Amino acid sequence: MRVIFEELAARELDGLYAGALFLTAGDAGAAERLLTSTLVDAASVYFGPMAARDPCRWLDGRLITEFLATQPRLADGLRAPAPLLASTPPAPRGWLPHMDTPAFCRLAEALPPVARAAVWLVALRRWHYDDAATMVGVTRDELVELLRYRDVLLAALVTPTAHRAGGNVAP
Amino acid sequence: MDCRRTREILWPPERPRLAADDVLKARGHVEGCVSCREYFAQDRLLLQTYDSVRRESAPRAVRERVLDALARGAATGAGPGVAEARPAIWKSPAHRRRAATALVVLAGLTLAGALARRHQPGAPDAGAVFVEDYLRRAVGEDRIVASDPEAIARFLARELGLVRAPLSGDGLELTGAEICFLEGHRGAMITYHKAGRILSYYVIPNERARARPPEVSPGALSGTAGGSAPTVVTWATASLEQALVGAFPPGELLALARHAALD
Image (cartoon, rainbow over all chains, first blue to last red; front, side, top):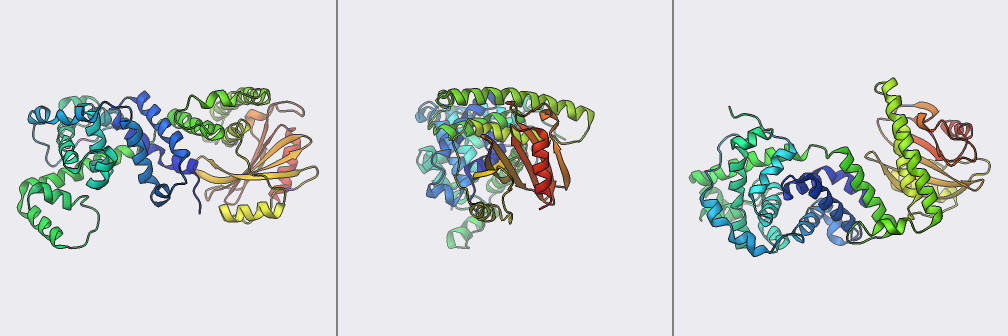
C-alpha cells in the first residue's frame, strides 16, 4: 500500500526529533528548526527511488545532510580529535545510566558537530562505514577517526554532570 | 587482523552476515582481544541507552508545529526553507477569510475541548482532530476531483481496504476524495458541495473504534446555518471513525450522519 509522505513523517517524527536533538547537542529550538527544514525539503523529493527502498534510512540521511549544511568546515572537526581524545578517561564498563532525551543529547556538546554526525549515523543508527562516510562527506579513514569520539560520548555519560542532568546514580 | 579491521568487518554486530573468511578471522580476533570485547559490550550499552531515548515522544507542541509546517509547505509547493510558504497562503482574499475564521474556530474548539474534558474525565475530544485537518485543507490546494461514487468507492477500497460507498443524500454533489492522516491513522476525506458550501466526510479505519451514535462536537454547538463556523458531527461504527465537518446547521449534519450510520 502506498505510504504518503505525511504518514511517514508522522510515524518517524519522534525518532528524527531525537536525532535532531543529538545533532544540535540538546538545543530544542535548533533541533525543531532542523527537523522542520529536513521534512519540508524531503517532501518535495519523496518519490525518488532511494526513498522507496528504505524511507526511514533515507530520512536519516536527509537529516544529516541538512545538519551538515549549516556546520563549519569539515577540517575543523577532523583536526580536533587528538588533544581531546588524549584527555578522555577510559570508556565505562558494564553499566550506563538511563537518562531522558534532553540530558542524553546535551552530552553530545562534547563532540564537534561533524563527529556528532558520524557517531549518530554509525554508533546510534547502525549505518555501515562506507555509507556513513559518503553521507558525512569524508573518507573511510577519516570516518574511523571521527568515530573515536564515541569514547568521548561514553565518558560523558558516566560523569557526575550527567547524573545531575537527570541520569540515575551508578550502583 | 587488527582491532580496527575487526570492528569494521563486524559492524554492525547485530546484522546477520555470511561466515566468510574475514568474518571468521574477525570473530576469532574478538574472542582473544579484551579491548574488542569491551568495545562491542560498550556498543550494546550505548545502543540500549539511545533506543530508550529514541522511544520517547517528541513534545506535542513540537509535533504539531512541524507537521503544520509540512502541510503548509506541501500546500504551496515551497522547496528549501519554510518561511517562503506563508506569503503564498495569504495571496487570496478568500483564503485569508477562511483561514482567519478557521483559526478562530480552532482556538475555540481547542478551549471547548479542554473544558469538556474537565467535566468528562477520559472523554476524548473527537471533533478537534477532524477540524484540524479540515482547517489545514481550507488553506491548501491538494484535491482529487471525482464525482462518480463508484470511482470514490474504488479509491477507498484500493487505498484503505475499505468496502464502502460514499455518503449520498439530497443536494449532495460529490466532488472528490483524498487520503488524510489523523492521530496516527490513515483515512480518507470525501468532499461534497451542498447549497454552495463544502462538506467534508471523514472515514478513518481504526481497529480500536467503538460504536457510538452521531453527536455534535461540544466546541461546535454554536454553528448555525449561514454562519462561518464549521459544525463537527462525529460517530463510529465497528472499526471505523467517521465525521462530518462543514458550515451547516448541526441538525442537518446529524440527520446525514444518522442516515450514514445505518449503512
